[in-house]
Image (cartoon, rainbow over all chains, first blue to last red; front, side, top):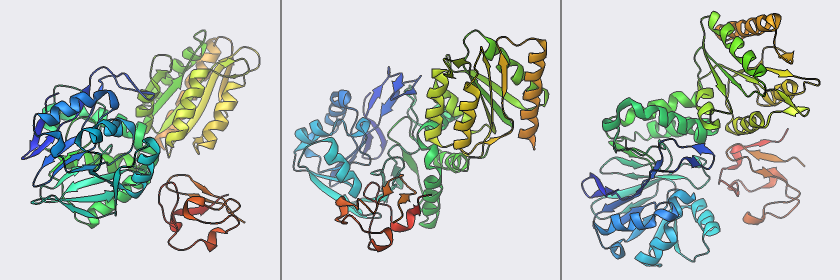
Length: 394
Length: 53
């Protein structure tokens, strides 16, 4: 990627990771970008770096604009290695004594990533740094999504450098929201569902703070994906909506299967839900990635989980998904369980107690069918689906 | 003595252990922590803690 001037004297000097498909267990079908920003004012500042293997791209981009040694300050909005991995080589190149501005916890966390005696300058929430003609202001955003996370706001230009907030794992020819259009929203939604959902309350609090201080944004620059310049309000509004965890009349049937019996049950359950006029989406965990399923969980009212019983337990892909979903803490969900079994049939019960632990409202003890569903079994599944459909409508 | 959980990051303050990062000696009850004490993991204030059930 060549550097892109996003506003006068402000450049995205980050890197594109076209081929990453697994981002710590999150499927990135379109790759991602590691955005880093260079502001050239009386002082020159670099905001964030890139993942370690992309250092060369970063430094080449910076070099096309200024001699990297002329960088006066580095801002670290977030310690995670996709943004800090390039820091040791950046510091080596620009001068180890250059100040690194970060949150108090950022200082602690960077020290635990890199054993370097760097010139850390921990900033206060709301603190400012003058670049000469322009001013940077720092906003602590703890647990959005790490304890160290902060945003940096360029006051005069009203540009927010929002670290992972408002990001999307998307690498494409488009660099701005107006170039990509609404197609980007599914990527932003997936990012929220898989990274930020559990911090929904913090997101809402942050939005209140933004309103309270009357902060306005001409542009929002996340560290992943496209930059919001045409309509930053669109992504802000979407974050409020997603944080409220409202769901539509939608049922998700998530399952895996051994000899197609649990799959057959899933299809009949989906049929029952449809008969109630409710949207339903069956997702087989052997074919659908956990992170794609999680994106659908976010706005589903009911999550119905099915598993065959394997060796007296839940099928491994289903356990994987339950662990993943539990950590992301979806709220206000109706739950139901089902599954085919041979002789003991523990899976449905295990899943049910897991969902109860996640505070799902369970609407049925669960539907278990021994071996292959017969006509009567199919009808029981359809009835089960109708019951779920009705619960979603009330 | 009760343990308290940080609502922000999930850190648990255990009075038996105290909080070495903030020079809080073992045996200090949550209520006896200074008002300006902060969560050693995420920096949340005392108000952001809930008694563990």
